[in-house]
Image (cartoon, rainbow, N blue to C red; front, top):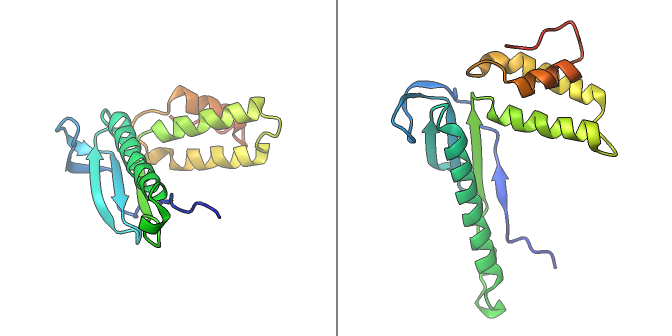
Length: 169
């Protein structure tokens, strides 16, 4: 029988603007935030939300991702390890989380992974797929805070569909 006791729902934001010039960063108290970490219940309703400035985003988003994943893991293991006669009929409820930001951090991680796959995997992503990703990054660059990082510029230069299209800056 499959173990269905571990469920995490990943949601891609809720449509609200990520940048909030009036919000206070929970990490350092600065005014103006560019990232949001949200935990939700099984229905997608937020039950916990945190906002951070660009400097605090990498640390605190990693903190909440680790904390929330660990809570789900522990609940799942606790349920699984109960004696069958003491186990509830259903596993712990699913939970959701989403992390959205106007920083380049997620894009950097993504393009680094894609670049490794393209260069070293036996079955790399097709070049047209990488080209579409590059186009999407360029199209959304204006939504990001700060200049385009070198890792992203390199990806755009290598995998962008139109070599004459200058990388976003």
